[in-house]
Image 1 (cartoon, rainbow, N blue to C red):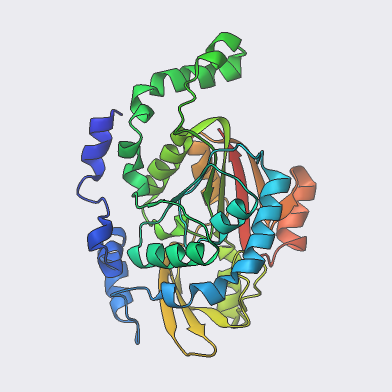
Image 2 (cartoon, helix red, strand yellow):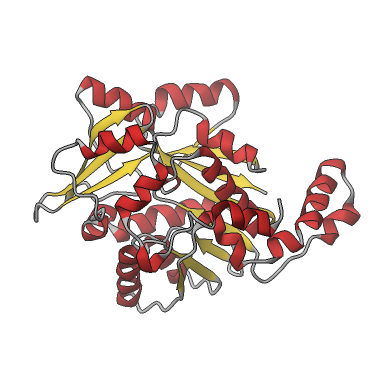
Length: 332
């Protein structure tokens, strides 16, 4: 697919940050039946998600920095000169941790204008100055035109890796814009309901990476959410990226095979926020990563490594069954 073809595909869907509306975005992503069902849920204000009002306390920035930076240092090829991009900045916690390490080459992206403003304030409070972009993942290629100019070289190089042609390996273009690590944390990919949109976004991340670069992406443990919800014993344990469970209660208020509505309630102020999310099936995100071209995918449960084979099956289905989040480190 050429750059023009890809742009034509998404030109009418691309999010304009200056006109962003959460309910309009949901109307674009959901089926008519899903949207009608959503509108029948009582006390649901979707003109805005409201997540920006509670996310700092829900995240617990200091604790998240501690957990994520330790994870990145132990499980990725993070170096001082790594070129890194956080494609879903959120509260800014991950970038705060990376800048506190003294890493100079850190880029940030956040499409929601209210979350972008909040992240800017949080970064400023840590005396961090960084430009925050607002690119739609589905059309991010338009801001990095070498994606399509160099795609044939990249594909040739990947084939060279599989067939051992070292000459091809040296041909790959290492543009200053290409990244060593792309971060997509905080259960962000789950806000894309359409499979084709998710895979195209993942392919864009793939193309943005240097060869042997890494994508770090996570998802909630939705199968366990389903089980706990229907047993009536759901509890947010705070063992993943969102550690502030002492201040914010997270609870599913609607669950179906194709849509989950989460309500977040601040325990002190009483402020409520809602997010409408696509519940990944078991193995679905990992499968989409492979379709997008990623290989050597390692899986973690609440930051603990899941091994291969029988041992990994025991870990995932027994030892770490109640994990809140699964994290993947996927290599180009």
